[in-house]
Length: 587
Image (tube, rainbow, N blue to C red; front, top):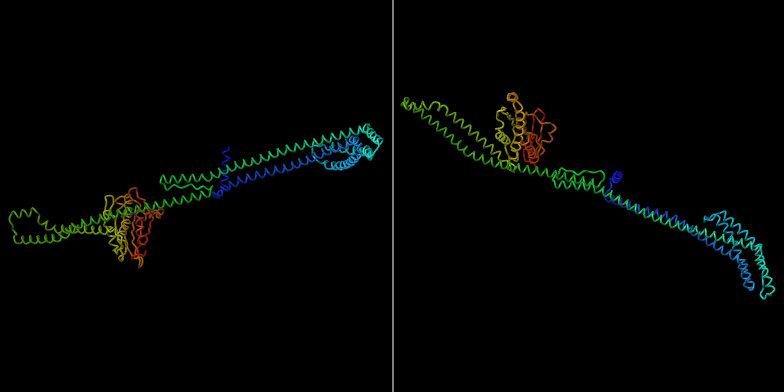
C-alpha cells in the first residue's frame, strides 16, 4: 500500500515537473524543504508567542494584583493595629500627632484603593469568585464607614499638647483603654481581622492563579518547541522524500540511457535506440540527441560499408580488367599468327591445286600406284572442301579477333581519365562478352537482341566506368529474362521469345539517350524507388550483391552528371533510360 502511494505521488510529481530542467527540480525540492522548515518554525513561533504574550500579560497582571492585595491587606492591618499603637504613643505627643496624620492619610489612601478595587477587580479572572469579591468589598466599605463613625472620631479627639499633665494623660489613656476593651470595638476588631484574613486568602488565590499561568506559559513554550522541532523534522523528511523522488526521476532515465550506451559500445549494435520518456524534458532531449547521434553513426557506418564494398568491387573490376587485358594480349598474339599465316596458306593451297590440275592435264593416265593413291585420298573431295575449310578458319579467327577486341575494350574499366569513345563500339563489346548468355541454352532458345542505333556522335566519358554501367544494365536484363524463362516451356519461349532492345538517340544538342528495354516480368511499383539503393536486390541469396544498379547510378548521375530513369510495369517489361551529356559536364 505504501509503495502504491509513493508511486502515485511520484507519477504526480513527474507529471507536474515534466517540462522542468534538472536544476529547477533540484531547486524546487530544496526550496520546498526550506520553505516547509521556515513556515513550520514561523507558525510555531507565532502561535507560541501569541499565547505566551497573553499568558505573560496575565501573569504580570496577576502578580500586580497579588501585590496590590497584599499591600492593601498590610495597610488594613496597620489601620487595625493603630489604636494599640496610639496607646503606646500617648506618652509622646509629637510622635502621636505625626502618627495620627499618617493614619488619616492612610485612611484616605485605603478609601481610594477600595474604590479602585471595586472597579478594576470586578471583571478580572484571577480565581476570585465575583460574588464573594463583591461581598468582601461590601464588608470593607461597611467596616470603613463604621470605623469612620465609631473609631476615627474617638482617636482624633485624643490630642495631647506638649507639657501635658499626668491627669490629662490618665484621662486620655483610660478613654482609649475603655474603647479597646469595649464589646463594640472587640466585635469591630474581629470583623476587621476577618476581613484582613480574607484579603490574604484572596491574595493567595491570585498567587495560585499566577502559578497556574506560569505553568501554562511553560506548557506553551514546550508546545512551541514541539511545533518548531516537528516542522523541522517534517521538513527534513519532506526534503529527503522530494530529493529521493527528484533523484529517481532524474537518475532512472539516465541509468536507462547509460545502459543503452553501454550496450551500443559493447555489442557494437548501432540499431539500438534509447527509450524517450515524457516524464523529464532534459533526459528526453538527451535521449533524442543520443538517438540522433547513433542514427548518424549508423548512417556513416552504412556509407562506410558501401564505400568499402564499392572499393572492393572496383578493385575486383580493376583486377579483372588487367587480367582480361593480359588474356586478350596472350590470345591476340597466336590468333594474329594464325590469321596472318592463314592468307599465305590459302594461297599456297590454291597454287598446289593448280599444279595438281596441270599435272593431271599433262599426264591423264598416271601409273597404277598413283591412281590407287589418288582414289584412296579422295583428291576430288579434298580439292572441293579445302576452300570451305579455309573460309571456316577465316571466320573462326575473325571471331577470335572480335572477342579479343571486345575484351580489350572491356579492360579499360580502370581508366580514370575522360576520353572520347564510340558508344556503339562499347555496347557491341558488352554484347560480345555477354554472348554466351544470349545464346541458346538447353531449357530456352536464344535471347534476341534488337539494335536500334541512331546517329550519335562520340561522347566524352570515363570509358571504363561507362562500360561497367552498360554491363550491369545488360546483365540485369538477361537475369530478368532467364528467371522468367525458367518458369516457361521451350515452346512457350519460342512462341513469345525473350528480347532485349538497345537503342541510341540524341535527346537534344547536348545529350544523348541509351535505352535498354526487355520484355521480361517487369518490376513492382512498390520496390522501384529502392532500385538504386545500395545492397538492395530481389535476387536469391548468392545471386546478387545489390551493388550493380547502385554503382551504375553513381557512374551515370554522380560521375557523368547524367540521368538514370526506370520505367516498368508488371508483366510489361522494364525500360532503363541512360541520359548522358555528349561533352564533358562541368563539375
